[in-house]
Structures are given as C-alpha cells and as structure tokens.
Length: 170
Image 1: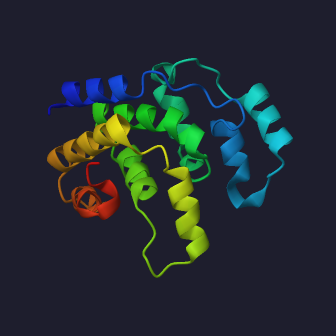
Image 2 (image 1 turned 30 degrees about the vertical axis):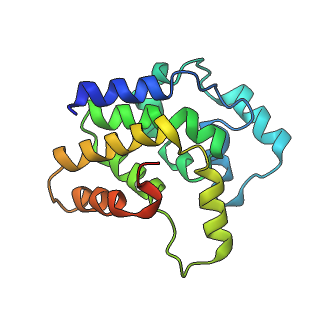
C-alpha cells in the first residue's frame, strides 16, 4: 500500500470516532508527572484548553507535535481519536519524531514487566481490533517501507512491532 492508500485506510477505519470530551491532548499532558488526576479538573482542562475539533482529520500538525507527550496518558477513547491523526501526520509529512512516538505507544510491555503496566497498556489499546487494527498494521508496514535504519532505528522498531503477537491481524 502506498502512502495515499494507507491514509485512506486509516481515514475509513477511524471515520466515526468522537472527540474525547473527558480527556483531550492538553488534559492528558497535565497528567504527565502525576500533576493532575481529578476527573472533573481534567474534563475542565479539555473543555477550556484543548483544541476542539469534531473530526480528528482537522487537527493541525503543530498541535499534534506540541502535544505528543499526551499519547502516553490518553485512555482508550482518547487514543482512538488521536492516533489516526498522528498516523496520518507521520505518513504525509514523513515525520520521524511522530513515527517514533507512535512506535513507543504501540510497543507492549515485556511479559516480565509489572502486571499493572501490562494491564494499563492492554486497557488503553482495547480499541485495536478489526479495521482499526488493520489500518494501524498498514501504517506500520508503510513506516517500514519509508524509513531507513537511522539513529532512531524506526524501520527496526516497526518490524519488531509487526512480529509481535498483539499486532497480528485478527
């Protein structure tokens, strides 16, 4: 699949996801370092400081880049809304930094790691099924095809992801 077909597959798979009004990018960033955890405050931050768009396709690249740390703190609903925007931005702009952030997000914890960390990962990634999973896999395959083996080792990271049980097609 070329870049255009991959972007189309992502757009189709994630066309109906809704903006996460309870925890947007800016609110998720405030969770970093356990700065904030009160659900009402996070909802207020989302309401008052997040960029509100009805469609993830309308998120500007600058917003995605500025808030990429939020990927570590979004819940399953938030990831469903923001991940396709990050995937499309990484693909269309050939953006290594965003591709690296996504590779980190997509990497499951090692089996020997704490059970709580594993539970956290699988709860957040519960949306990765069916056509959404297929779209993510297509995006990862695209990353393998376009990134060379540079200092970030993105090609190798995505190859490893594609070999993992979690990322096998349903």
